[in-house]
Image 1 (cartoon, helix red, strand yellow):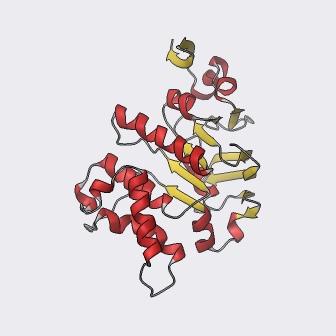
Image 2 (tube, helix red, strand yellow; image 1 turned 180 degrees about the vertical axis):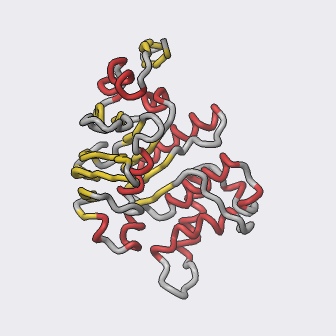
Length: 264
């Protein structure tokens, strides 16, 4: 059930060198919702995700999570609230999958202490949640890219977050596993009341699995805003808005009650 505000983004701007990536972005994201950011490369999706997680400091503006500014929160406290799954995570040492996942418990383990029984139990639960219990004793370096992505989702979920941030969670996955992973993410949100903010390349996946969509465009030096539309999938993903974001024409088909975008 989508409830009160979970994340507030107030007038956030960000510049890299001489290029402005984000310009006065403001969004309000409800607790327990699945919100997907879509748009062309360079429109600021990953940058905004990192700002929400306090991995980047904006030039202007602020982000509040559950009423608290992220840049004023201790890192261990933020890690108990927010799980983050980046793109292309790499580990060179052949840790077992179980050992990689349990590192997500670090915000709960004091310095120089060993994991407790609760930490071990929650690790096994997270492995089961994403369907990779059978990989627990496999070296992380010897599993597929798609399986590594699931390990990172388990690692984020073992933090017991109320907010889950995912940057291209379907990267490296085949078509079947893309759909099953997105279904799993939506079930996590529904069953556990977790607020999900993710980026996706495929607008049709966003249409299928989102409560709300943020459609962004790349800034070109004019006074245009980043956010073209923010709202329900049907309201946001219109041919006019897609044209404004991507510079391409699409038509919308209704297939068994579902919307499908097709290039013209």
